[in-house]
Image (cartoon, rainbow, N blue to C red; front, side, top):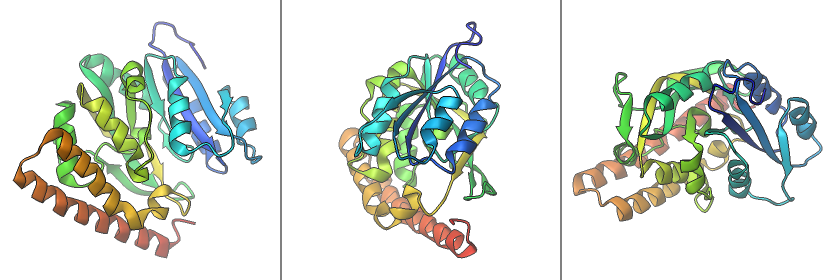
Length: 281
């Protein structure tokens, strides 16, 4: 799949892996179905003996073994550093991307040279791949908005009290901008993605795609489930870092504090409901 069409800019798909089965197989299948051809496939993996390494090798991924005990942020950072394409998409091992995802998002960045990243909506699926919610993300942004200054999108995220960028599956970066923002930070684990988005978005525009380009999987092993109890504290930590950097006015500070509580309670209620229905197992 690598460099099948040299007229297209190369896109690096990087997948940090740790105990990827059983969901990794579905991700690999979704990558194989991409309509975009010039793809570089990279995985960083801590071997676990569950068949992940063999599945990635068979699919044509270049693999780098990471030492046992490598944390998530270090694994994500190494995967990102290995990318050589003009654009990079990092995908977590249990998520999915739809066939036109790369094609659409390359077009978003090609059409908006000032954008350092492009984000899209995504769907939510359960452990069995059943769609639970569609078109999530980009909250309160009009559907005809195709480009925003990164700082404005960060302000909206701050006030909203939750990550309106979405998970990495919904994002395509210009590789240079992403690599300059390294490393990924996991000192505030639920903000691992948002911390990097902040670094990239601060220095450029963000292109928007209001269609779903993939699906985020919720399960009993997902970070969002296991860390729900500390979500509010970690959101407020990110908001405090935002305040130190961007100095929002008093009204935005009040809205941000309310938004963080509202989004945390909404998410906890949603996970409790999904657990009750059996969607997380």
